[in-house]
Amino acid sequence: MTMHLSASPGLLAGGQRGIVSTAPQATDFPLAARVQAVVQQALDEQRLVGAVVLVARAGELIHQQASGWRDREAGLAMTGATVFRLASVSKPIVSVAALVLVAQGKLALDGDITQWLPAFRPRLPDGRPARVTLRQLLSHTAGLGYRFFEADEQGPYARAGVSDGMDDADLSLAENLRRLAAVPLYYEPGTSWGYSIATDVLGAVIARAWGGPLEAAVRELVTGPLGMADTGFSVSGPERLATAYVNGQPRPHRLVEGERVSHLEGLAGIRFSPARILDPLAFPSGGGGMAGSAGDFLRLLENLRQDGAGLLPGWLVEEMGRDQTAGLALPGAPGLGFGLGFSVLRDPALAASPESAGTWRWGGAYGHSWFVDRARALSVVAFTNTLYEGMSGRFVTDLRDAVYHSLEQAS
Image (tube, rainbow, N blue to C red; front, side, top):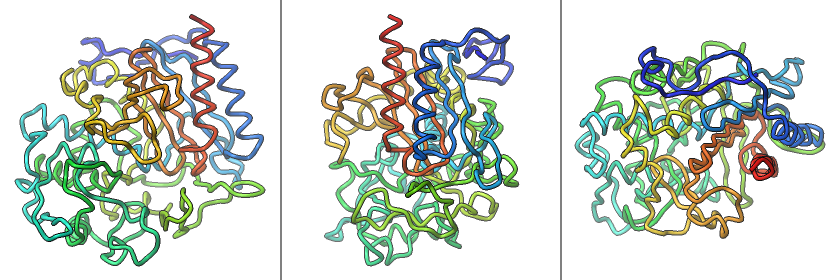
């Protein structure tokens, strides 16, 4: 089935920005065959349990599939309507909410965030005060870190009891920020890059500037206008929720409550709480606390690819996709820079990637990846329920290469 994606004024006026339903059309069969082969191989080799993959080109959904199991033990098949724990896929959503407030004149990209969070005043290691801006939070150049990057439970974030937003910590967002502010920054804001809990701080700024809870702000500013009805900070029940799995031998095992999983040797890793998304009282983590469907997220990506029509002015979309790091190297990511909410491909050759320079990309720890190649009018979403294969494993590069190989053959 093929659906058209449009950002025309008439369709936007109806409130459905992004994917718009139309009559079925022919699928791009060469691309479909390659993508299906990649997904099937990952399932056959038991690197993945289930996946939903969407590929859009020039505003048209040219491939969609749901494969494998939503819940293997219960015998429930994956479907296109499956809802996933998003982890860091929430970052672009919350970043866009902040930028909508910038467009409305309620926030300033280079404004000091203490205007909105007067109690959030972290200091440098030598005790000097530091000025943190909205742009630095969005680009992960604010001097913050993540607890899961620490080597063990003796790290500064662990000792302070900072939550990464994916555990079952019984605390409020305000209390988590209080603990975070008590830990010295890793570097002076703007002088380096480090993937971090900055989007959780950003969420608190959004809530203050908007004048209400973060979940309500994101709904009014982003998910509501785009018709992302399945996306939010909690789900009412497990009926459509994908069961989470962890890669292992001889096959992935079901993620258990409180299980700690590291994606790199020598790091403490994330202590996951799959039940967190079912708890309406869990604090809203802007950086990792949302759930949603693949179709919802494609709506957002396609809106941004088409200059944010009806949501953001084009200049802010361009700013999102501009490398904000002044050429700083991203650890373990050659050829990549970082924009406002996601990575930006600076050098395809250095990254050994067929993607165009300027391609946006990121993922999520529960097993997700996505990218937008605006030069090719291409958006790809791959949500899986298997960590970390679906975020950073072979599947991610195999899928990318299958898509580009098909495009090259067609041109």
